[in-house]
Length: 319
Image (cartoon, rainbow, N blue to C red):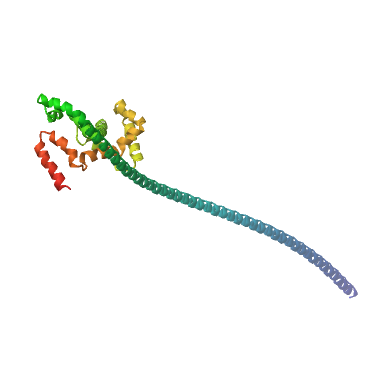
């Protein structure tokens, strides 16, 4: 019995020892598990912290990148805005400059037209003054010619008497004088004006023929030449137009015609729209003259009777 108890006690002690050993092993395993868990926790915390820092760095890097992109876009927008502003300013400046030039051109054109009008008025005034001076000169020359003619009558009486003695009358003497000589005696100034007008008309007609505007023998050749210069009224413009025409066709023209380019005074006479030479000639040919101015020419004409009727008409009815 005692042995059984002792054996039981031994088993109990063995069991207790085994229990303690198991407890110690369990405690050791628990502690080891705790340590491993703590180590894993620390490792997880370190990894989490490292990941957090990494995420923060990435977020910061992305933020900086976004800021840089935003700044680049802002600068690009500013540059585009500045470029657009400069383009707008340039366009506005070009438009303003074009408007300024247009205004200047309009002002110059207005000034040119004003100068043309002034020149025309000055020309008309000078022409009227010249006409008045020419009339005074013509009147003075007529008076002097009349006086000389009266004074010469005394010297002609003797010669006339001699002619009458042989049956030749004074009227026969006058009929035998060349017509131009008689006209010179009666009105040298008028004849000079008609000659100058005739010369101008022939020169213009000849140019019309050379330039292919009309036949030289055509009555209207001179008019065709004047019309070819256009409606310009300024003497300078018409002279320039004539010079341009001569230069354009210089290869088709005679040397004498082309040489007119170097003779501005002749170009002025040819190109004048209101020609003083033509006007003075027309005044003689178409103007109003006293009855005595016609009588010599009428009495020397074979159409004397008809012309006397016309003279009576313009003298009596045309007053």
